[in-house]
Length: 343
Image 1 (cartoon, rainbow, N blue to C red):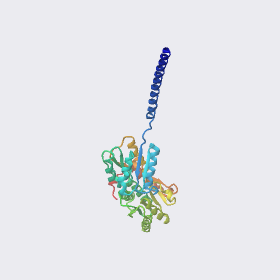
Image 2: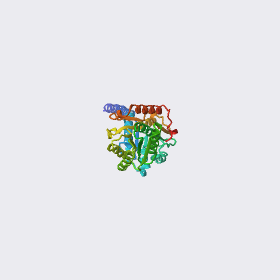
Image 3: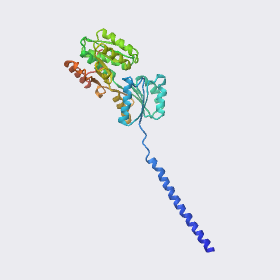
Image 4: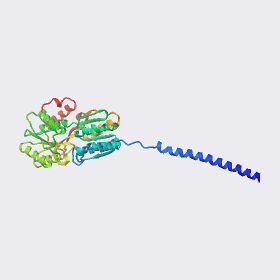
């Protein structure tokens, strides 16, 4: 009996020892399994957001910013977000909201966002804050860029002065803000540079939304003899194009190719390629090349230029077209200094 008990005791010891070995082996395997997810952890997405002062369906300023975000999403693989028609009272809260959510870049689409961006940026040093059409910047994480409105206005003025037969041309602006006043200034300089005999009629209506008012002002200029007209009025600019259409004179579109709005009226568009501008500045941040400064972007960077309506382009006399092309080339090569030109 004693031998049997000893045998059972020894057997129990071996069984217990074996289960300990198996248990240890199992624990090591679990530890290995637990480590696997961290090795396969996905890379944190690059996130870009924008605050827009108006709606994305305005066929102009805000629509172009939205297109820029989509381009950033496509080209840089970024995760994007936006808020449209943001009131000034919400600027800081909106910046702070996106920054708190870990967005790498937040764009205030307009110079009016500068003060709020600079204030909130101090709370989020690892987030880059950018403003469009501003020259404000602040160490270490606030910068600005502009797809130059003055250059686009200049090109519009060149076309108008080269085309006109009445020696009267016009431009209707929306609000009295730098992108509008800058474009009007550029328009007047382009007209005078191309033909000093041409008179440039200009006005600012005080609204980006009042289509009827912009249309009425355009009609006044047409009645005064203007035979080609441009706008810088965002949504209200549709009224200028409508007035030109009704009076059967050409219009000059802005921001993007607007010939689709009135194929028989919009002769050319003085584009500001806002989407490419957005892509350019965001890529600077993603690539680690960003500096807190002002980035001017224009004809030299191929983000400002002219897009002709193929249905109407042949209505421009060959001599006028050649003159326009030469001036565009000279501007791109730096032979024309807009700041030194008289209005």
